[in-house]
Image 1: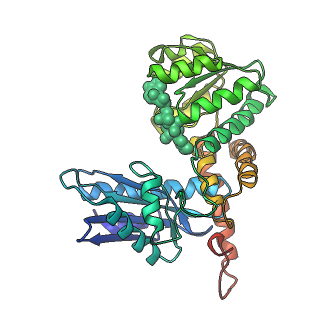
Image 2 (image 1 turned 180 degrees about the horizontal axis):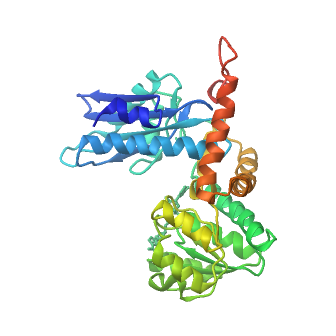
Image 3 (image 1 turned 120 degrees about the horizontal axis):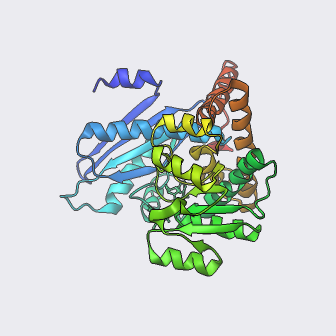
Length: 367
Ligand code: NAD
């Protein structure tokens, strides 16, 4: 891999390689863009076949965070960490994550970490022993806790914005919503939709979540036969890449008009984002509609988490999705491309303000 060439392609700012023989820490923090504020992104603890795969993953995920954070309106930039997990060596996790925390501290606020795949509150508590530049620890005063309710609320707001675009009204009353995956996010989304008078059809691979959804008042459909029912809105809340040639054909037959759900990377390929547009479907881009969790986490840095303030900020997802629709119409592009444009235009506009010299720049971490 030609590292500087790869960094140049999408204008990455910095990669930090961390090595600590004592604890076995081998980690990569990639800071993609800090125009809007310090880079915020979780720490993934994962086994990679090759070191190069870990670098590529950190870079890909960091850039994704720049777009997500920018498009959600947050004053933060994009970054991500991967810690290479060695399946053959038992490590002392406290020591490993404290060592990592010391490196994060060394970045002096250019990077704020949080949990991701393979890490959670316990690991973030270790990190917090060494640095304040961490969110989602149970130890910090004003911590925000489980992000799923905020993610679900954001998806609900984004779904309403998409419904307004498709049906002329943001109300979900009387709409049929098909939720694929009624786990942490999907279940709460179902609750909100039912409370507004929607009919909710839920699918899940497992019996437990299915039964909970049934008790809540959802109808149940087999997850292998998802689009055998008629529905207005499809909410993918399980895994990514569920929007593809075959599912789009099935969605058409099922009468789906809106796609609005929590899953990451919903489009199997970019061309499916063009295809659904040609079919007249309204798509609320995944990384904006599911940004409620990161909005909640970022709120911790406004002098401690405030649930009311965070909720207001999450509700702004409605406006951000509307902005995406406006850009899509203005530039005659599909909504998945408009989401990128929303992020890029915001970053470019703020970048221009940086020509004014200030001795100590204010940011979310020193408020
Ligand atoms: P979760 O694991 O709690 O729930 C996912 C549910 O989907 C599970 O109940 C699982 O059994 C079910 N499922 C898996 N494969 C399925 C399939 N093929 N068909 C039907 N059901 C299936 O996860 P979650 O936290 O609710 O997150 C849901 C999605 O949203 C994930 O893609 C996640 O990456 C994304 N997301 C979550 C958050 C958050 O705050 N939790 C934030 C951003 C994005």
